[in-house]
Image (cartoon, rainbow, N blue to C red; front, side, top):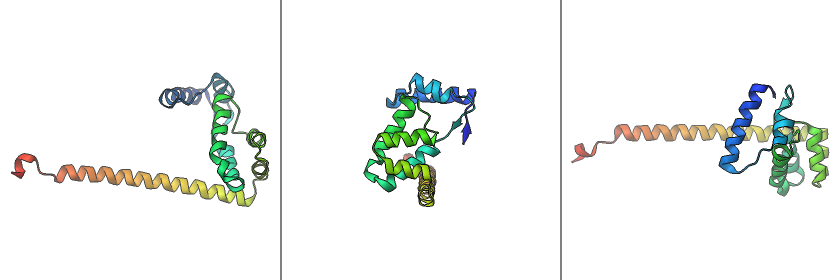
Length: 153
């Protein structure tokens, strides 16, 4: 968890502007004021991540739709999706009351499933880092061992 401070808010906003230009994902002034501007507030994705796990357990086909709704709530509407009650209300408004109830209860099954998903994602990141490392190493080895064309003749 990170606590919002002015330096990080400026850093995040500058990155958000680059992301907007590259992807078209909009970041509104409401987000800047209500999320980044809340100095001293919590800044993490724990509630949203747990909510997505709750949806994956209760209504799996709606997980991607829920992710998009969470992103819009945060980046466009400027809602504090670090707050589990805000996220729970968003789930209820979208007809995902079972997921909202699980989020509020944060039962052992939900927490375990969430931890497993995070661990899997971290493992995937580690695996991707290893693959990238091996690809770079292979590329360097190819350059070092390849004979110049003038010597091959």
